[in-house]
Length: 284
Image (cartoon, rainbow, N blue to C red):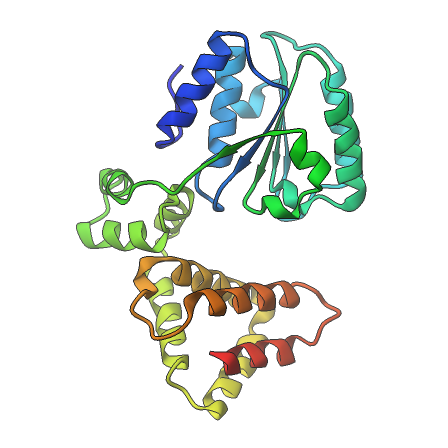
C-alpha cells in the first residue's frame, strides 16, 4: 500500500510494524494542529489495516463521523450498531471520528461505553486538535498518536510541485505553519489576495486609535452573516501562530488566547457579540 499522507514517517513505520505483527489496538487518538493531515492519515491506515485498496467513500467497512456540526448521541448509536457487525472483507470494521472534541456530553458518554467493551474486529480512531476537551475516561482508553507540524522544506517542495511560484509556495508554507491541509485548501481557493488583505487589516488595527477600532468592529459585525468575520478571525489565528507575525511588537500568545475566546463567544447567540469583539480590539 502507498500512503497518500504527506510526511509522518515515524507514525507510518509504527503502524506498518504493529499491523504486520498483529499488534493493532482497538482505539487510537490522533492529536495535532487542525488541517495537519490527521484525518487523511486515518483513512490511509484504514486501507492498510484491511488491505482493501477501496476508495474510502465506497468502503463498507469504514464509517466516518464528525465535523464542524459536532457529533450527536444518535450518531454514536449508529456507530455502535456499525461496529457490531462483522467486516464484509478484511479483518476490521473501522470508525474514524473527526473533530471528536465537538461531541455532545451524551455522545461522549455513549462512546465511552463502546470503548469499554470493544468488539474484537473493531478499530476506532479519534481525531482532534483539542485533546484537553475530551473526557479523561475517553482519553485514557485510547493510545495517543501525536502529529507534529511538517518540516518547512518538505511542505515547500510539495507546494512547488503543485505549480505554485517560489513566492506563493514560501508564503503558504509559512502561513500554514506546517499544515498541508490548510496550505492545499488555500491554494485551491486561490486565497492569496484575501489573506493579504485580512493580515493588513490586523497590522493596521495595531496602530489604530479607539474610534478606528470601534468603526472596524461595527463594519465587521454587519458582515457576520456572510461568514466574512469568521474567516477574518480564522486567518488572524493562523497568522499569529506562524512565523510571519514574529516581528510584531505584541504578546502573540496572549493575543491569540483572546482571539480564541472571542471566536468562541461569537459562535454563541446568547452572548453580546459587539461588546466581546470591541473588547478584543481594544486589548490589542
